[in-house]
Length: 471
Image 1: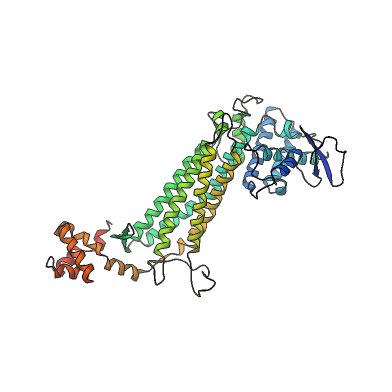
Image 2: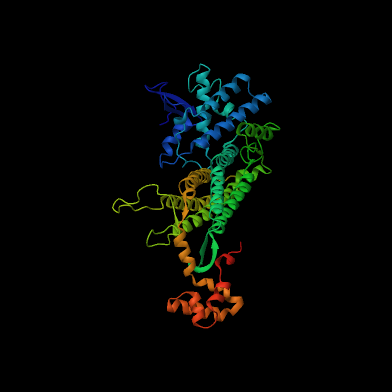
């Protein structure tokens, strides 16, 4: 509700002003007029920016205050107040003061002003002034000095994504890689039947199979790391369209220096700030790498799901940990719950990738106006993958065991062992042996002897699964 003719005060509320007039705000809240308008005009959906994003915003605002103090644009008192409030937000205070829906202006202006207003009002409160007075700290003139939503919001997008990858996703991927490596070593000597097209193929070892999984995870980790490095370039200093209007010389470099110090990650000014504001190619690439990880992980867990199927009517090559009952009606049923949860996360990430791809393609002229959609999708994918893959490592893969008798039975019964005879008796004779064994339901050894192609002793000398795995 806004009306420039409102009385000076209303019970339980105070009046806040912006360029459109006055707005009633609950006295208990730190935000101001623009946040209140956004609450009314974008009151749909339950999606909000996650805490990590808000904290990254506070970090950037803190860096701005420190930079302006160094440039002599803010007094010690002004900068100190802003820094103090940003530190409060970084410590988890005032979390309820950032209530806006992510579904807002495509530039993120509403959330940006939410930060500016909360910081300014809290600063003024600390200075002994009333909320809404905009003195000694003004949300635009001081907290937002040398900044525009158009360069600050993408800067926070990059910062929050890089921090989330480094702190949440990368450790989970390292754990998954190392857990698969340990299992590969543990299972290195166990030979199993290979399968291609879901049909019997030549043998390999479980170690080889798990090292293939490990290699997929390593490649995904490398791809994400490369993409994340591209996101270490920041738009800060470009202001509205990339020209840097209303900034001081050296401002972008000084800001990146402060942001790097505060985040313990290395950031640099973007080579082309116009591109960083008009497009979000770096984050499209980041999510493309996340999508690649989801594809690899879904393949891995689906293989594990098939190998663990059973216990009596499936493959039952491996056993996975029994974490909880699997059915409300079937006693003793156990399901691959970690695998199922990770599979759903992978599908969600793939869906997010389409959203990020489409949003990244929609920037018109000097501004991509789909920034909130891009960043909530990127951060959700990072968060879900980091949590799900950590659980997958701890509660599933680490506890996998091989059912050796079942695996050996599959190896012994596989007609594809006949492939080892190709170089000795030729493809056609080997095919005859395999066909006879299948039709007569006898072993390959017995089939070769029955057809007079090889004696059983000759067969034993030629067909050894261990010699077929290449290790």
